[in-house]
Amino acid sequence: MSSPSKIQLARLAYVHYEHEDLDAFREFAKDFGLIEAQVRDDQIFYRGYGKDPIVYIASRAKTGRSKAFKGACFVAKSLHDYELALRVEGATVIDTHGRPGGGLLVVIKDPNGYDMGVWWGLEENSVASGTLSSAIGDPTPVNGSMEKQRKGQFRRFRRGPAMVHKLGHFGYMSGNYDEACAWYTNLFNFVPTDILHSPENRAMEVATFFRLDLGKEYVDHHCLLLSREGTGTKVHHSSFEVEDFDSQLLGHDWLVEKGYNSLWGVGRHVHGSQIFDYWKDTSNFIVEHYADGDVVNDELPVAYAAAGNMAVWGPPPPSEFKAKTSA
Image (cartoon, rainbow, N blue to C red; front, side, top):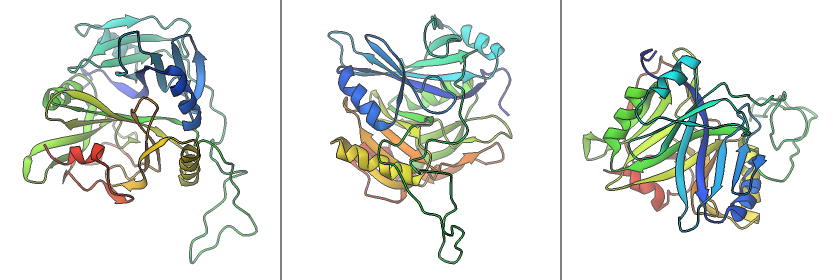
């Protein structure tokens, strides 16, 4: 378990983006499986079917400003941890009155200028039993080649978006990689699950998959991905969990039919094991649907691997992902 002197975070809640054409993104978000929680003139709050009242904030970029990734927000483990965040230099309290979830929210700037929100006392969504799978009816077992457990039952599915459960992770690329990694791990309970190094130089880290250290409690393989970029900093992608493989593929077909830009997928990753499907939204930001990801706890040692082997199966990676295979 990480040091109690650090700000303890319980889970990732949401990401925040600014879009030049908010109306176009609103249409994409509906087809991507995000649910509108609240709509304002210049801002839309989205949720999934899980407990988090917000998983994505879409704001209209101000006149004269281009699209932007603003940052992310995590839920604090306790009021004490929220208060620790308040003491960080430059911390700013955000008024959550009238927003989904309410609660107490403080924002800290990370070394690259992105917002790092710490949220406490939020009102969670009531979660209905079951999931929003694309399958119709009660869950049924899968028939293997040797064992046929589903007998006299049929698999039927609805067409439409792959409904989002939650925000699973986000990642960005930075020339400030070492400082950013140190900042997140020194201030919060982030720990590395997988560290990727340059194939030519084992001592040169090029990317780290971070999870939250909650001791024996199982958590997602990663909630934050940082990778080394030559110069500058830019968001890479944000990833949202869907229920299962069928839902993911039906959602893929739905987005294809709507004419959106498929970037990479469908495939299965090596690190985290999740089935992935990456898309470009209407602002050209990368968003991902994923299913069947790994969960781990503090019994797992840090893994080191050469960068480059990103998928067990699937199409060849596009240029947006090849940049992470070297320093």
